[in-house]
Length: 212
Image 1: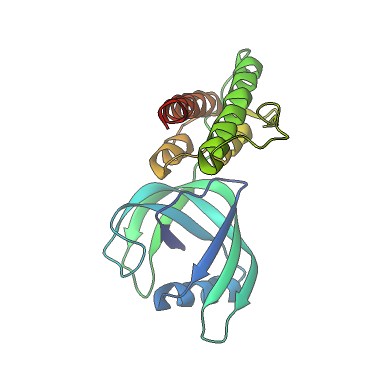
Image 2 (image 1 turned 180 degrees about the vertical axis):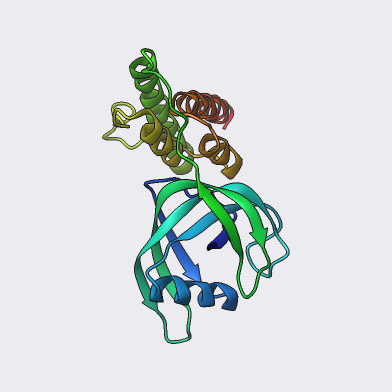
C-alpha cells in the first residue's frame, strides 16, 4: 500500500508536533485524501531541492505522522497540526501522481540488552540541552534573562530513545543533525548520537557567545 509522503526541509521526530501551512495544490490534494480517509502520512527530509515545485531528492528514513487538527482557509489553504507517530523506512519511491508516495515499512529500534550507562548519559545530555538553550537565549537577546540564575533544568524523561528525540528537538540544531539521530538503529546508539550532536552545538554556542 502506498504511503502519502510530505517532503520537507526539516525533520519530524516521533512523538513531536509538526505544524504545516499547506498551499501547494499537490499537498492540498494529499491532505484532503489523508483527512477524508483518516489515514497517516510520512514526513520526509528533502536531501536536495526545495519544498515547493517538485523535483526534489528525498531521504529514505522518515516519520509517520497523524493529522490531529486542521483548519481550511477561505482561499483553499490548510493549516494542519500533525504528530510524529513512529519511524519508517522507504523501500521504494513511487511516481508523484498527483503527490509524493512511497512503499514504506515500519523501522522499530533494534532489540538490545539493558544499557547500564544510559542513566548517566541521560543526565549529561539533560545538562547539555539546558546549557544550549541558555546560551542560545543569551545570544538571541544579548544577555541572560535577569531572573535566571543559571540554565533552566530540562527533564528529558527516562526512556533513552524518547529522550534523544526530545533533546534534539529542544536544541538549536540543523536538519542533518536531527536526521542522524532519527537514523540511529537502536536506542543506545540514538542516545550516543544525540549526546554528540548536542555537545557539538554547545561548543559552537560557547564560541559564539565568547566572540559575540
